[in-house]
Image (tube, rainbow, N blue to C red):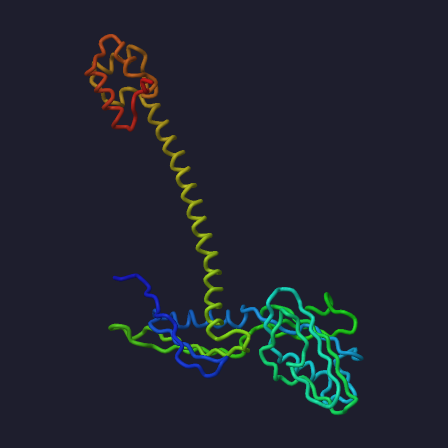
Length: 322
């Protein structure tokens, strides 16, 4: 029986609905892997892809979000909600301060914000506020940061908030919508393989293709931690097992060497000569060289060969001549 888990086909783009929305399809997934991979990739795309958002705003002559500004159609709550819709692309990890200054009767949009060189706006046509008179003015200072997922303002208010600034809930994720669906498909004579389809819409700061690739890369990096750790554990276990085996082997050899010469089952003549020379154990025999044995009266080459053969069966040899 084949125990290999086959790999799916390369993901392919099957529909480009808009610039920021696309549908991908992955075919020939091993049975059950459509749900396994689909759920994992979806969760990573929603929670772990970095993005940028406004975290604090400071509006001139405004101390809290329940204020209004003369000559501005929207109240502060509405303005903040509009600011949260602006999608930023930031090129470093440091918080960026951007500003907006407007006067006169007009609509103010995201494209009117004065940016640093490290920031771009993906949706410059987003409405921020409407000035309804020639004397109306609006000045806003905003802090933009990189982050993951969703960050509530309460988590940042106590640590970083300046006097007069308003903390804003930050939606960092660049994913606006993601759905996946799995269906069965035929591969050879089997009909239970999976086809996985992703419908991904981003905020324009990354493409749907980048979102899918980056999510897969994050999962690979996470799983590599397990494979690396497993390799180290296996090496440690092997070393431990080898060490224990050596200790056990040495113990066994030590036990054997304590055995009597009689246990070698030598010829009576050879055995008697050894005993007469007070060589009573295998350990005592192993301390001798071949030339030492030949010096024993009555012990010739034939007897020495017999002794070496008997020791060899137990995995021992006479002491080296060096």
